[in-house]
Length: 205
Image 1 (tube, rainbow, N blue to C red):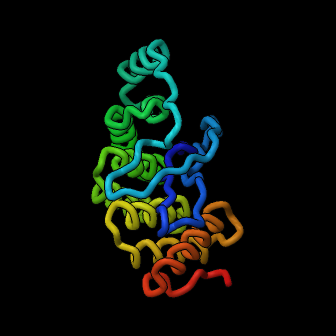
Image 2: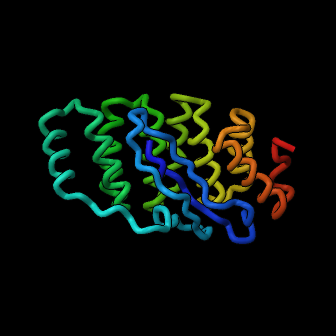
């Protein structure tokens, strides 16, 4: 899963304590490109995918991957790579096409499912993103990066602060010392400071 597959956000006064986190999970291959954390202003609409310049689209690589995919209809890895290439270039509609193709072949891949959910969010489809995250959790109920992203989409895409707090609390309960757990704890603290009734606790204090 892409390290870029994260809904990056600073929610102005709401989440002033949250500073550029990375929510995407790593691809099993370990080939995901490292990138610096990026912050974004909160908005009801999805932010652009990370705030920095997108990676240039390598047309030669895209063509080679597409040829391989067309010649091998059951090749999941190549389809995921195509999704990643398009995601890095912030061409989310194309990324969605290839992630969906990969998931048709392997619906049980929680990482790719969550990447797809984040891509849906970036094309302003928060409901579809949440539904995809639910699928990820049906595969792996303890997938903390999915839960972290779910909280962000609920908070920023749906203005569901209670739902966001519940998702982040799960992350803290599951993996308090992990980067996801620390990010979720900061999110809960920021939410509690701004809206005490929305976040009953920070799960770590």
